[in-house]
Image (cartoon, rainbow, N blue to C red; front, side, top):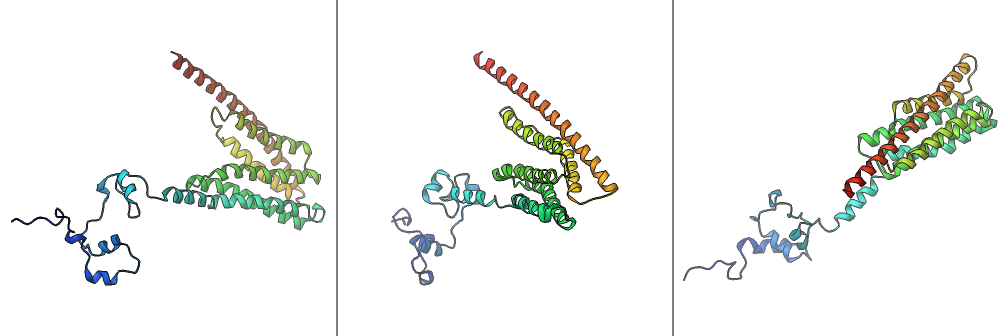
Amino acid sequence: MTGVPASAAGGSSPAKQANPASLEKTPKGASVADVSAVGAPDAVEPTAAAGPGAAGPDAGPADAADGRAPRGGKLAAAAVNQASVWNIANLLTMLRLILVPGFVALMLADGGYDPAWRSLAWAAFAIAMITDLFDGHLARTYNLVTDFGKIADPIADKAIMGAALICLSGLGDLPWWVTIVILGRELGITLLRFIVIRYGVIPASRGGKLKTLTQGVAVGMYVLALTGWLATLRWWVMAAAVVLTVVTGLDYVRQAIVLRRQGIAAREAASEETEA
């Protein structure tokens, strides 16, 4: 009588039989599968060649059968996404938000005209402006863009600039019309972006970036207690900032009108193709 393979007779193959010596070393409470794995030195581990249906070491039988992600995969991914909010770009944005009340307190300390307190206020404002330059760059370069950053970053920008302008106008160092023009433009363009977002996004232009830089330098010079020719220079820098503010604001309005027209035309063309 010819020999019948152990697998066909219902017995265990040598690779699946547990080694008695290994059973003695098996930790208490280990499962039968764990014991069998210890006694199978010749077992072949699954490789990438198994195809998309191959499951990882933690996947259950059902997961290995239909190629689904291991149990808990979605929870793990959610945990990673939640942790990604606490990245360096968002931390810099949070720092800028925290600096706003600190800047106001330093700006108005001792009546708001003490050169020492104004210098400390300038330092807080400068730190806020520097972090504004870096957080967006870091977020885009290292793929750290989050929903929190998209919302908090523009709020932090408007908050520190608005606080500085209002403090300067309240102390009589800057005419109120300058503050109204700059803040009115910033709020108006932000609202305009939301109105036309259904048709597309208005990208930041080089003129807009130059405007932001010029505004930061001008406001920073007004925060400091400057006299003489430096006080005259800061007036000219602020004048340039106001001109750039108005010109770039009008350009954004033009872009919004063009973007809206293109969006409406694209929708009408798509509607005609659907009807045809």
